[in-house]
Image (tube, rainbow, N blue to C red; front, side, top):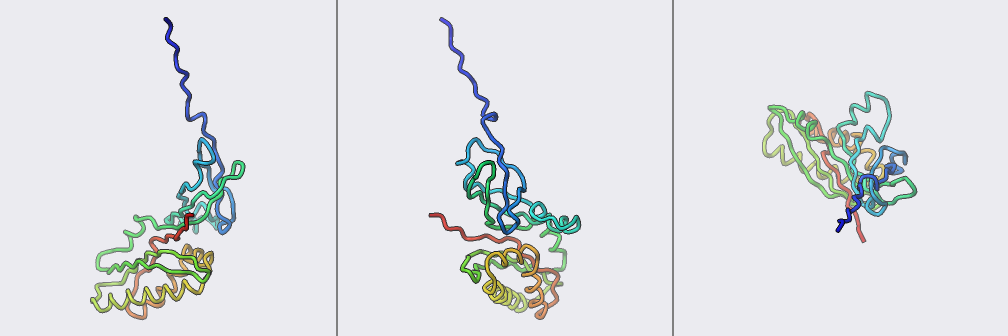
Length: 199
């Protein structure tokens, strides 16, 4: 009796390519491609995109932005386009390691903040002071970081807050506040996460 052979389906051939569309705050443009067997499996997928891919302001700026990774979540699919929203960003660890040179003091802060339009986010800051500092100075720096960050964020709407955090404007303001306490080398937002509501 002849044995019927099962037809083997190449799953790769059933998959389709979709255009990854950036959020409107980044121009709503195609920034890459994403593959999936169907539209439903694309929904809520998180994609990490280099900030240099989202913005094109010349090669020098692209090199500066290449250390920032932006997290996008797919929110809907229309035709061949997978639309996304911004849910956070982080700085590459290799860049952060260059800040913590010998003799410097690194101070970390995690703070939950809310923008003027009630968007909640968790911001992880790193401040690097020149030289070794006392416990009291460290305490004062951390307190000022928390106070200043809250004051800055609550004055901005969500999109402006994200734009200023990605382009170093928030950390520039923080740096100016902290340098009044002690000599500072750098202040960076190492990670920002937007609080999402899933119903």
